[in-house]
Length: 441
Image (cartoon, rainbow, N blue to C red; front, side):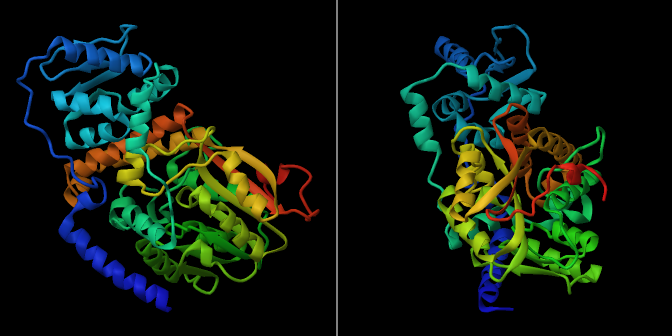
């Protein structure tokens, strides 16, 4: 164990104690919202109803009702509804109006706002409605200024951000991911009706085929999660893998599993940042890490890849993205994924331009991620009693909203899932077609 790992482990032990004593609020809630004096018995006045109607107008008249704290309901323009958003006090309505992107998630987590009906479907309606809704001028600008913050993922900040999300407990993630492999990225569903486990294996096979892995090659994986993909590559393609990750809990889990599988001679899990990747390698792959890097650091990532990638080498980056440049949802960035940013393809190109790398192929698996999130949400809901016992009710509501909202963002086209294949710019030993991706060798 090197000095960096020793320091990280010492800090990890301290943080784990803080988690035990501090509970889930440190990981989901941030600064807890202080509920105002209950107003459920307060009468609704004309201004309250007018503001509720304006909220529906701002959201593009989605197919949803708004129920106010005295039980009165504001109906959608079309008369049709997928569900009801219930504001339990006047303060919840006003806070939503002033800062919806950040405050609504906190209010839902606190139970001051409830959703009656199909939560993912209703959120899909909201995302689609926002694209056609009425702009609010200076109020919208103020909301953005209050909600969003600069993403600066320095070495220290990146480690803290990853700890916030991934080190909350392997037992928690094991409840709703795909068993021992613990794949926490978009699955691939080439056949309708596939189970989550099969779709995650299909994703790994799909990536390996794109990379055309050959026995004996050296692979560097940046951001390896719980280590399942590195194991898959070693077991099925006879390659050697150095997998980098800055989540202590994930690396610990991965090292235990690789020893149990008897593959420690071919797979090494390195507790370190992608910026410290060293040595030469034939293949670079990153599945679900770029979202945590931040565009400011893309040129550095490109230089790391170019520096180590051998002639004839190739790579693939798999990342959540956007069609147009904008920050991630402010509530998710503050409460769930601090430091996260989904790039556009144009922003991703700075990785390859700075590293003198050629993009060979781009695939968008947006709807595959929506289906993956459907499976995760169903499994999460099946285990809410266990999650509540581990954490608390606020944590359950927080993560339910995160999973449902993420699913809606993909179905509504707010988020994309890009796989970008690349190689050295002077490499001419390239496949003439995509046949190898879809045909068994």
